Image (cartoon, rainbow, N blue to C red; front, side, top):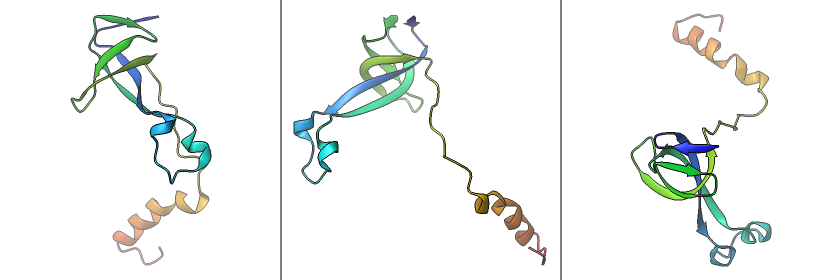
Length: 102
């Protein structure tokens, strides 16, 4: 799949090699490079996965890196729901509205 200028993409950039990382890190962390991933709009005319590209982020930053995804999806979540937290909004509204049964 090929990306074209203006497509939403994700790049990866090496920030620190393992030997450049700071000493007080856990041993397993010190053994791997520090990389950043950034999403933005492709500025090159076209590109394939693995190409060095430039993107424009949503806040207007221009960043270069290796193209790793085209039209990337969001893969994070906030984990399992916490039952005690599910009703906080409802309870707070009652308190703010002066409901004495809250």
